[in-house]
Image 1: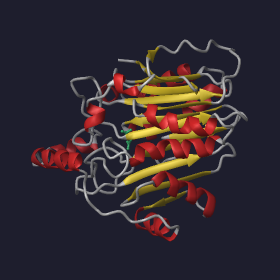
Image 2 (image 1 turned 90 degrees about the vertical axis):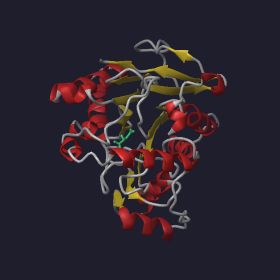
Image 3 (image 1 turned 45 degrees about the horizontal axis):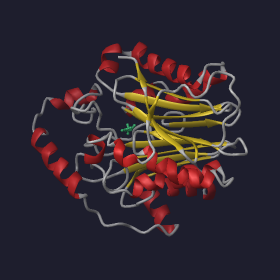
Length: 337
Ligand code: ASP
């Protein structure tokens, strides 16, 4: 968590620079390959995805390998180093989708380092789309994924101990039911929120789209809670005729509007990726403005023309864009509030 809290260390991001999204005018020549991903950690993930895309590799391989970088990094908010649920256990959610509409997903997976790869195996090796909990873990082990020790990272351990102190505040239980409370995002001094997801979408040199999304979910969530990230159409959606979108933020808000499916459908109607993301964000507000104001959600999208865009509820959301060897940069998401 600490890295994300102390984010915007752009000096350490190499060539990364803050740009506004003016690269692609409407109807611009298709730009591909291209990969974009949520938050600043997206820079490192994009770098890995780009190695695959630049040599003509498949978008699906790129989006899997890209987010594996984030899953493996113990010092951020995705993967086994992340914050646990309220019972002190890290549970991971992930999904992946390819250009043919194939998709796979895992929910509440414990002790597996790369949930995104298990999601891909679900897609490729089972007749199902989603596996959760013990069944997902059993499948992962049968597929040869090692079972990692059940232990919190030092940062997560510290954060959990802190949270336990406040969890004594009983009335919060009712607040939880309204979508706020202990697993609502916290805003830090630097404007960032304690979200725990990387979503990545890419178009390869062949013009095919794929996406991935992986998370530990909201920190200190109720045991058994699933957010949007493993849900196709909520945390991730790909339609190879139109575009792809992924989401981060308060998953319950994203699920209520089938967020990324909505973004893709708005693009199908002719909206640019940014305008489509904005309309989806506005839909969240329309459902419940007060709740929307108390939460953060960010969407990012690309279309078949290689245009990209993002939009969020609150200031502080960033995403990383990579479309050339020397073009891997952070964009500040435009925001509604
Ligand atoms: N969307 C994730 C969830 O609700 C959390 C996040 O993006 O931080 O589980």
